[in-house]
Length: 80
Image (cartoon, rainbow, N blue to C red; front, side, top):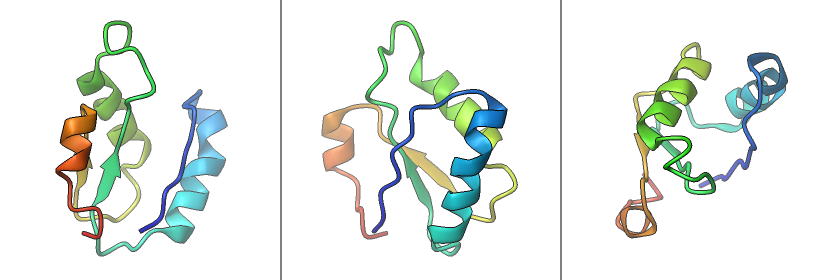
C-alpha cells in the first residue's frame, strides 16, 4: 500500500502529482480517494470524487473507490 497526499489545486498544478501517481501505483489495483480533509458542506465529496476521477482519467486503473467518513475508511480493505 502506498499513500500520496495532495492538496488539490488547478489542473496545471496537479499535473506533477498525477505523473508521480502514475509512476508509483499498481495499475492492477483500484485507487482509494479520501477527501476527508475538506469541509463537505463547502466541497461535497461526490463533486470532489468527480473532479478527481476526471483528473486521473488517463491512468489505467480498474476503479476508484472513495471513503466519505472515518468509519467508511476503517471498513476499507486497504491491501486491495
